[in-house]
Amino acid sequence: MPRLADPALPERRRGQILDAARECFRERGFRLTTIEEICAQARISPGALYRYFDSKADIVAAIALDTRAQAEAALDALPDDHGLIDGIAALARAFFEAFEQDATLFADIWAEAAGDPVLAKALGARDRATRERLTAVIERAQRAGAAYPSLAPADAAEALMAALEGFALRRTLWKDRDISEAVRRFRTLALHLLKPKR
Image 1 (cartoon, rainbow, N blue to C red):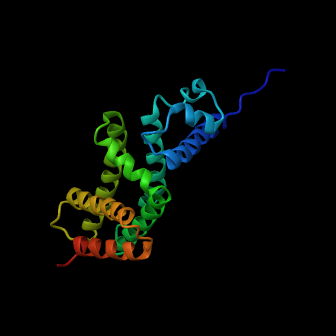
Image 2 (cartoon, rainbow, N blue to C red):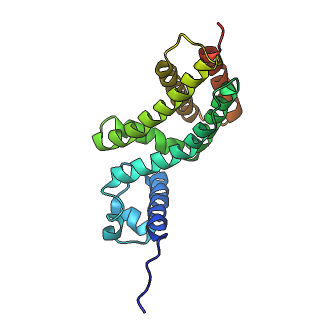
Image 3 (cartoon, one colour):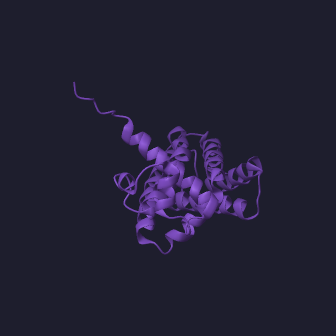
């Protein structure tokens, strides 16, 4: 009787490679880590790795996108009404917590993306999708009278995302471990940007 393929194997193998890459990047940094070192850490052959990823940049993009996706799950819970600011604060907390797991790596990834079009394209696609989702939430809140109506929703979403990422990078740079204080500051900014009456 022929063996049945394990349908969960591709996802497990992909996770195994990403976990190994994270370990290597933490130890040696993104630039110095080689595909061979990732394969050794994952205990797979280069051929097996290349079934899942085309390059080291592809692996790095997957790590960044997977981690960001965890934080972005909070977007699904954002309300359109007067709970919007608290929802945005919860999104900020989720983002800061996800970012903190590999803060130095993500700072390196963003810096690398500035000169790597493949990595920039992957990150840019996720960024656009997130910005569009946040823009839609702000538009609905404006229609419900729960957000400042004269600010273009896309501009508000862009400002909030830039601030969120800026807060995260500054926390990494200054070794700030107080997530609650960062969330409080971000919530205050969101409140002043989006509050219905000014």
